[in-house]
Amino acid sequence: MKVLVTGATGFVGGHLVDRLLAQGDTVTALVRSPLRAAALAERGVRLVAGDLADTGALADAVRDQQVVHHVAAMLGAPTEAALMATNRDGTINLVRACASLAARPRVVLVSSMAAGGPARRGVPRVASDDDTPVTMYGRSKLAAERALAASSLPWCVLRPPVVYGPRDREGFLPLFKAVNFGVAPMFGDGSMEVSLIHVTDLVNAMVLAGTTAGVEGRVFYINHPEIITGVAIVRAVARTLHRSPLSLPIPRWAARVALGVTGTWAAVSGQKSILHPDKLHEFYQAAWTADPSPFIATTGWRPTWDLERGLADTAAWYTQAGWI
Image (tube, rainbow, N blue to C red; front, top):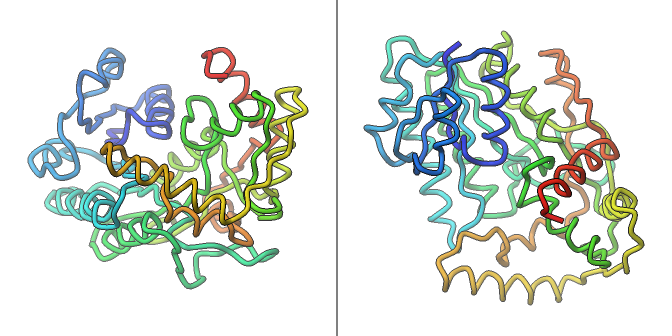
């Protein structure tokens, strides 16, 4: 099968490319820097230089593709306009490129649980719930979903929660480093309920979304069905690393100050950090949980990486890579 991946040099996109190549697919990657993606080219991936604003590159990238996995996204920016320019407008450009083809590919959009918004404690979200994103990022991903849904393409939207696993820098790595150092930070009292997904489970779901009948025109939450609290995650990381860290609850006011500092630094330095004041709206919710059973029933997907096994896998990779 011929498959295009955007975001192929990132965490999730990189794992997806590994899986596609392993199963014999012909992979094309839209990359901003061919030099950074040289290792992909060495493995047989066709590189198209450009980004989601480059209509010529998009036209080249989508040509003859059967499936497009749209993984590329901006995770953090000082303004909502900047996030919309990449996440919404970039998706619009990709949709237009695909819609111009005689044989239109299926487009699988990796969105985010943030597009749906927080859940109520004890009541995991389902796709039919009203969408109530609470952050700029969540609103930009919801706008991307709506742009795709308004098209005439065959499409599927996946909404994962926090994704973790080998090679992850944004999700759990800071927590692993803190616990390894001897400190266990957590937002509030640690009672927030969360769903998680290991990157291998997510990639398996993406492949199924690109090939299984019955997913077209639908939005799915993709996560392991276990529901975990923030404090349970911290304790599980501590057990995995064989540490007894000092618990450090972070009150809302302290997080607001810290995020104000990191957000200002990112804006001044031109960095695209996810740590800005807007994230405060995510950190102190009652729950970020969802029900993956519709996708399981439709595709036969089986998430196999529970928290204990997933953390052990992640810790082993971090240790071998020298990240902790």
